[in-house]
Every structure is written in C-alpha cells, then in structure tokens.
Length: 56
Image (cartoon, rainbow, N blue to C red; front, side, top):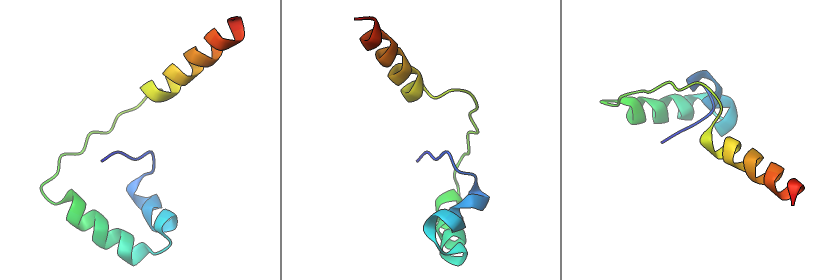
C-alpha cells in the first residue's frame, strides 16, 4: 500500500480520526514502513510524455 499522506493526515482524508487510527493500527502491525522521498516515477513519466507530445 502506498500513500502520499502522512499518518496524521489519514483522519482528515477518511473523515474520521478514530477509524483512521484503527485502520492504521491494523495495517501497520507487523509491517515495514519505507519512507521514500523525491519525485514519483509516475509524475516523472507523465511530465516526459507531456514534453514529448508538445514537441511533436
């Protein structure tokens, strides 16, 4: 599972901080968290495609 939102923002996204806390508790139990920084591959590819299309 991936998200561009911090754990603290999940309550706002889901509209209920209690449910968000319960979900995160279950999702993160025995999980490994990888915090990745930088531009996403998806956005980089989208920008490259857009530049290529404008050049055509």
